[in-house]
Image (cartoon, rainbow, N blue to C red; front, side):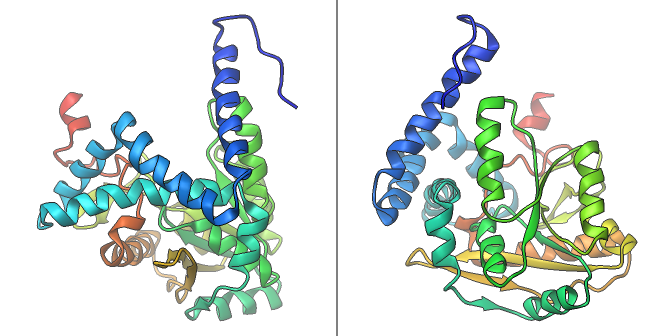
Length: 304
């Protein structure tokens, strides 16, 4: 049921109006057959939304910073593929039942799965770390099908109407989910200490985080995932949903990162994701201002 709008021109009314448009779009997409809606949303994102939002400019700038050796042809192929990946992921997120049923049949590779199963048998929790790559929700769906529910961490959206169904969609891939912040952190720690599994998307810029190497350039990277793994003595497992040319996924679960220091473990996570990005550059969300504020020459830094 759609919440009635607030007084005209108020901020709440603007949020309601925006969310109504989003819900209408999602509803129209969900009326299409599954494969058609996923492909259509990907095409709309790359051909309509990306040019209008300026995302193509950000992608080109980031590629110029860390992959200047790319040919124009290779760069523009990535510029087209990145928003398509984002659009497909959005629609997969809002098609949880059908998407999860498919993911349950996809292969799970790598030594990480055995480590996670052992942790579950022993009643221990684990930290799963991924990036904005491919579709990280495929990891949660695949493990849920294996009897391993993975809780999630999310950033609260400024639009409360959108946030409500966004959180509900996240919960379709495993519960509980925790809001980023002090209140969410308390619940997240309690969940981990009680033997729960927690998934974290690691590759966001945190302004006051340490500077570490990522794709050959300094980037501010939070060490919190490694710190939690060390403090509560649980495995730290890099996991990824890698999209295949036919639209299916391979779930890659790497060996747990050895416990050393939070800084060394976090750098290992950066290196893990970097290897995949270099192998499949069109599957990473290059629209992030990932390298800002770390001593790089980005347009955002120049504008400050």
